[in-house]
Amino acid sequence: MSAIASRPAATLARAAAAFALSLGFWVAFARPYENLLALAAERVLRATESPSVTRLEAREGEILVDRADFPPAAPRPGLPAADLHFNFVLLVALFALDRHPLRPERVAALLAAAVLLFLVHVAALVVQVRSVYAASLGEWSSARYGSFWRQLWTGAFHFYQIAGRFAAPFAIWWPFRTARDEDGSPVRARTRRRAAG
Amino acid sequence: MAAPPASPGTSPRRGSFAFLARFAGFLVLFYLLVALRPINDHVIVPFTAGIARASGALLRTLGEPVSVEGTEIRSSSFAVQIENGCNGLETILLFVSAVLAFPAAARWRAAGLLVGFASIEAFNLLRVASLVWVGGHRPALFSSFHTILWQSLVVLFGVLLFLFWAARAGSRARRAEAVR
Image 1 (cartoon, rainbow over the protein chains, first blue to last red):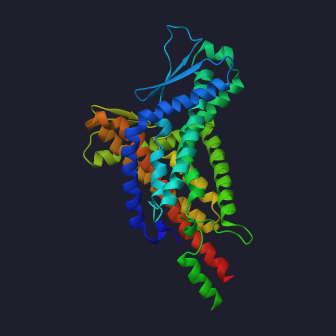
Image 2 (cartoon, helix red, strand yellow; image 1 turned 90 degrees about the horizontal axis):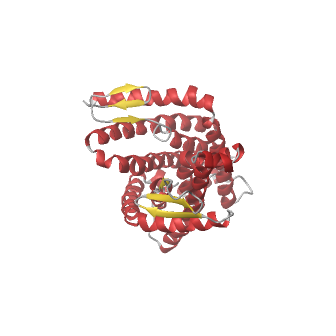
Image 3 (cartoon, each protein chain N blue to C red; image 1 turned 180 degrees about the vertical axis):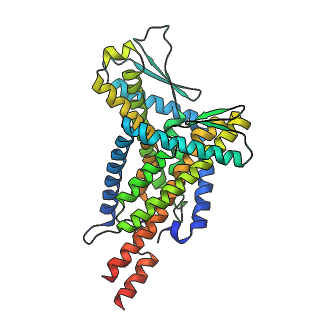
């Protein structure tokens, strides 16, 4: 039986402590993380556009979107950064459900999962910038994006906002659950004996 | 954590990825459903207005004078509009997709969906009521409470609920398999 079912109080206490700790960690490192995120997403955007003109800059909780072909006086869209990546806190809390979350192999698994979540954040930021290009810049958007692409980019980002950003930590954590929870549980052992008898 | 009960000849790892594939499929399907304009207008918006009324009633019971109009809750110094993301829908989508993707008996699924839905919405009611209170009394904290703290807590609550249900449903399924 899993830790949450066999020792709910201890498991919940671990998850709550991990939630609080990771929240502190997240607050402390959000700014440098947003710089890294902006840099990585900018690379992806520039590699997939022609001409390569997008520039992303993390500033005061926002990712500012700039393009070399924007009119100099036009305001630059700012995207709220915390919405993209606060789900890191959720990922850490899920790893803390393990009975021994501080064992080296579990910490390594958490680091691997955090790298995967970073890739999700980069993809989400790229999609968000594309959705801004496709739908939020008035005539500039209409001139460059048809109805299909507008729907696709805005729909993809809306999916991330409503479901994806919450599902991502869960889906990434799920394959990393510990093997001892997969089999050899007390319930299974008891049922085998009962079945044999 | 709760492992999907693997059918004979299926490795746990393969069962795990099969669960994830089903989960992703249900999530996209339900997202597309709730994104449809008629469903949004005739189901989601009235449901959200119901949450606003319930939260308003809870706040008034706790001595907080608020009024509710549609999906908006107003106090003397603060007003909040409840939208998708604040109505618990994102956690419900996650929970329902996970329960349907997990191999379990239909009766267990039905019970899980009913209890899960009620529990998540009850927890979400606390979120909305507390956010209105924070917005009125500690406005500087509202953004952090709204975007980070409560969203994560409600989703974590939904995930823990699913894991608890899955541990019970999974062990029952394995027990039935062993007896057979």
